[in-house]
Amino acid sequence: MPVPPVFQPEVAARAIVHAAFHPRRETWIGLPAAQAILGTRWLPARWIDRYLATRGYRGQLLPTEQPPGPGNLYEPWEQDMGAHGRFDEIAKPHSTQAWLSRWRGATSAAAALAAGYALARRHASQRSRPPQA
Image (cartoon, rainbow, N blue to C red; front, side, top):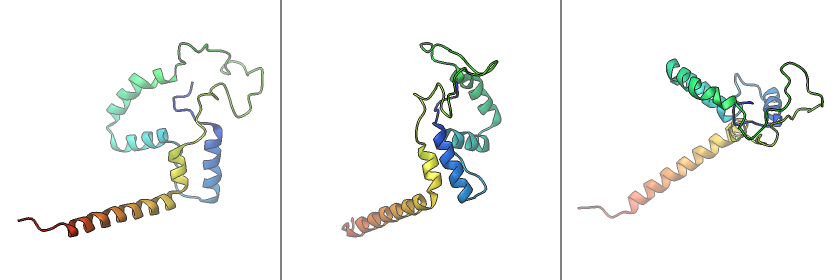
């Protein structure tokens, strides 16, 4: 099975369409992609190797209560599953990270406004306090 979290194919499709009309050098889709990219940039390779050796394999195994069922490794499925497959019920329809990436200009502006507001309130509350002796 794919390593969780599993996303619906529409999450990637929305990101691809957005990237086609708003090109930039890189587009990260989903928090796991961001974690993997940032992890390889900032963490030593031996830590990443150890983490993946202990958790990466187990993350791809099916839960014990779910039977393996047919696959497509040695032969195709007998029915057409379309874009969705057997993990449809656990797949997430949205990715917050992909949404924030798609609207990064607006989210950056909102974060800057919120930080400015918080600093202004802090400054105003410090000015309104009586001086301490």
